[in-house]
Length: 366
Image (cartoon, helix red, strand yellow):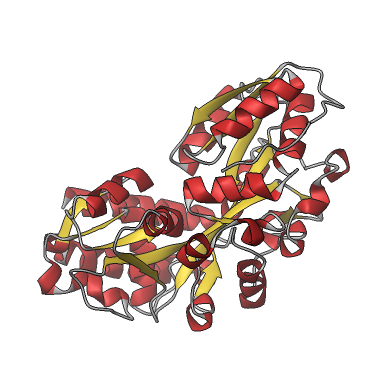
């Protein structure tokens, strides 16, 4: 199977494609739906409740949402259910697609069944993160990246991830261990995405160990290792922490809400990711799943509502025109920082997952 990964140019193209309350999406006609239920596994705040209510009213299809906070949990659940999944749609990031596809968990997307496919921003219709062997897997939803977030009232501006290790912020930082381990490798001049380590396990292990040992030596800087966007948001609101590695969405939401925080991409760089809705192989309600996907693409107001709730940038056409100036500014980056973002790759994911998971456990236990 061939993995198509994003180049720097495609990263910039997607970032420039558009950033993104739900206005009524109009009448959504149920042309193909046969089932009256659609089961969706997704992240908190990704699907606006007002959209769900309108969709159910217009189609008669009940939307059942099961929340997740981790790609691995979705994968494990689908794998355990095997040929009789209980889910119709899952929310996968582009760099994890290969793992799901090789396990026969996702079906190629039939874009011909989506009359609103053209309402995606042009850069996202052929997003390389969702294209495997010429087939499209998933409807692009939201774009995000790993960013440096700081409380502007209590910290000075920094252009480096090194701020996370400064003595003045002892017991005032936070991060997701597995995510920040990869960023620490990047900070140290190594490949935190393991692409260049394909077939070089000894070099990969040495780089992983270097980052692991560095984070262990700086554990005194960490107030708490967090697990969810809501958790790190609350720590900033409570002023429990001043600096953190975060996903861009939770920080953008804090900025929209008026909190004194800043989101940036340090000079060492960072990693980006694209969320998509994906049709499950042998899902129980595939017709209803396509009806749902077509409806969610129907209006930029829906994409704007998703952005307002999650803080992540929308892949839908016209969302930037719906958002207000403050909302657009919350997700904007200077051009030089945009250039520092590279998409996570699906290349060599098994090695990366194994080494990162082991090192993460060792950091937490130290």
